[in-house]
Amino acid sequence: MDLNKVKQFLEEQNFPNFRLNQIREAFFIQSLGGFEQITNIPQDLRNNLKEKFSWLLVKETKTQGSVKAEVAKSLLKLEDKQKIESVLMIYRDWISACLSVMVGCPLGCTFCATGQMGFKRNLTAFEIIDQIVYWNEFLKSHKIHESYKSQVTRVVFMGMGEPFLNWENVWEAIKIINAKDGLNIGQRHITVSTAGIISKIYEFTDLDTEINLAISLHSPFQGKKEEIMPIAKQNPLPDLLKACEYYVSKTKRKLFFEYALINGFNDGEEDVLELKKVLTNKLFHLNLII
Image (cartoon, rainbow, N blue to C red; front, top):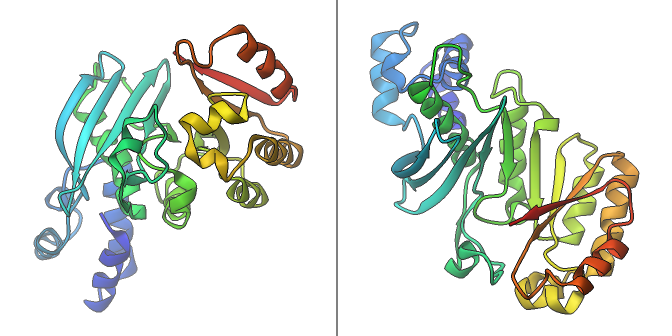
């Protein structure tokens, strides 16, 4: 739901401010399924809202997995018929949503299916947020038992697209995800994953948040990295590591390096030895993707 447009409509119709608060609560906290279910607002207003606005800007077209399996992936259709993927992962009391920020991606990483799609467009802030609301409604309708948590508790921007290349919308989404009257997910439970855009890492660090940062590394050698990640040519590894040192020095927080093992390419002894040289800072943490 684009709450900015809903707010504008309510103001134009001279509805009191508390009506927007009721809608926000129904959307973010109660995980209701539509305007018609908000029983504490007038029927006429419910009908008008349903006619003028989409409850969700994403619509499920196909889902694999389940709550019981502790992982699910959905293909979601946007209002302009473009499609994105979003993933739900459950581990003990962690319920994480892996969010897309673009339709496609312009970076062209060779190991990534999204990169081979090319870039279609950026997602809006509310298209990003609605992926979480979709999963909250999914959890509510598929819970295993009455005591089962029905809310996403963690968010990772590791889906389709590069977050730092759609940062204006991603940052707007994060503020609502974190807000008390939004989804109320703490900054320490939010992770932004980047392919390594150096200038944006500095900007992100200077925001002085507690949001986690993850870097796609995938090789400790500049030449190999360029082979699979063309963006590395404009963001060379030595400079990237300087930005990473700046991040951990200023924030005193762990920095996560994502490393997808590719058989015969980046999993040899020489790669391991070079990784040891690269990841010398005690706040650098390596996540192996097998």
